[in-house]
Length: 320
Image 1 (cartoon, helix red, strand yellow):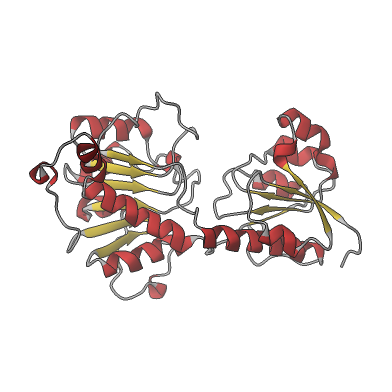
Image 2: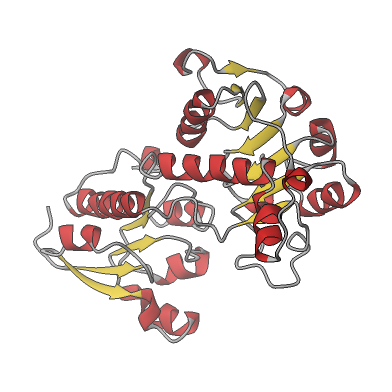
């Protein structure tokens, strides 16, 4: 265990609970204290640890960070971190799986309900002086099949909530142990079958070379004209052009999107003009409880490395 003070770089926004928990051995700096990325790169060599949310931790930064011991992700997805470069440099990369799963799952179901019940249109009608309930008559979710494209911690929470709504969860995940799935969650071995059988599909897989663009024209067509797509994972998993075309020509009934490429999307983003799209600004994990828990867990991972250990959630733990 070290008896020195570590320099810790924090994201622009983080619940104070985590940094406070490691304050006895860290001196903290917020990334927003730097005028721009160049200024950060000039100074990054002094940091022993970095907690990151969406900030880009690429090879250039890692190679300049000569004192760096750990990049601790506040969240699950590590696609903003060059894990290969970190491993080459002997830098541990960890994340905080599970801490925001319920929050993201609730948001996915919220988007599903909002799109299915056409809340965007109903809200606009009332604000515009309209009051014709027949214009927004919709179908219930009861008895529908909810396809889960990926069934890790978040997917399991979505399945739990969907079951409570009377839906039938169906998942495609080649990495899941079917024996660990709760009763009532069915599986398929082919992604095409998932989209063919589902009334709505919610995306819950990490962004990897394998999953980039995995939901494309064929998958969306298989969902059918009454189908809905919900994405609270990463925008790049879904082919943006294919989704736009499906929404425009009626191949797909609607979409609920918490993630975009790029982020933030500009006003001219091709998916924003559609009335059958409900959009939110990547806030699926933004609950008070989830933010506090992620902050605490990210800080705990920093402490583990400070004390000479390797966090259980280390992405590249096998290298250490």
